[in-house]
Amino acid sequence: MPPLTMQRRKVTAALAALAALLAVPPSMAAWGDTPRTPKPETAARPWQRQASGTENQLRGLSVVSPTVAWASGAKGTVLRTVDGRTWKRFTVPGAEALDLRDIHAFDADTAVALSIGPGDASRIYRTADGGASWALQVTNPDANGFWDCLAFWDRDNGIVFGDPVDGAYQILTTGDGGATWQAAVDPDGLKALPNEAAFAASGTCLSVAGTDDAWFATGGGARARVFHSADRGRTWQASDTPIPAGAGAKGVFSVGFRDSQVGLAVGGDYSDRHLATLNGARSEDGGATWAPQQVLPVGYMSVVVPVTGAPDSFVAAGLAGSGYSLDAGRTWKVLDRTPVNTVGFASPTAGWAVGPKGLILKYAGPQLGK
Figure (cartoon, rainbow, N blue to C red):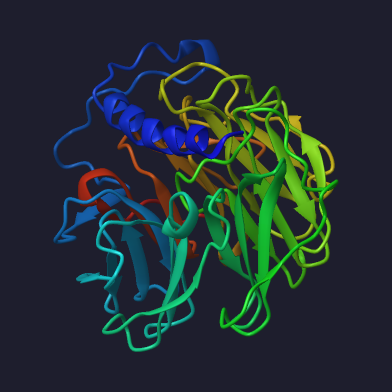
């Protein structure tokens, strides 16, 4: 796909998401998901708003513990909490015009943030002093490249994933905490379909589990797919999912695995957040095969994550709202209808969500497993 086409897709995604916030949801009865009914003013909300100090769009989130979390977003914005209640805002020097769509934190002091964009607008920054200063670690060396997500297995070993260049997806890995990065060379395993690319919507189009497994998700092409590597990103195998694709706004937006075998993929159509179509799939063989699995609430989901400390629990969310599963994705319950971009959890009772206009929400809902 020409790089300008990919760039326009990212810009179009942001505009469509904004427009979707103003949409009026249709009936959900077709999928057994009833419309929201008014709640008493005294009813507890599953998400409690926290002051962020910004109105910039937030899409990156890394939850380290019940008190420590980092978030990132547009205009070089990074936020951090160390008490679970208040957030401090930083602007990464040199990234003031960039969109930090993903962030991974190791503790209260150390984090890496990924900016997206064509060519050298794709960058990785690192802080080791709680956000007081930032160092540029690496810039995309390919003018036609477009990085989407990053993830780390541990402090040393990480991976970056990007849209196709010369017909194959970009994968870079590090074994020294990001000081140096090496490109994966697997043109057959990483071969892209015509018009296929990834969606940098939540920092979770790429995910890892254990010490060696990684997955990334795609859309836009004729089929929505998930790619899997069992050797830390050196070689890859693609599998089709039943989630609809075939258009630039449709496909798999996020993939999350609790271990090397059981995982979920979610997506939909970002131009229609309440479109009543299949928005999820489930795998029990590491992503080799996928079965359809409707996720609640019905509509566009941009993120799915396993809940730390509860092996059978997952949370999915997007502009359609948020929902949870306590049986490894087989059945779902609606949490809330508030539009968000991504979520993360440190335990069955501690988590956050971030979204449009600087939205930060702390989880205050039911315990998500034991």
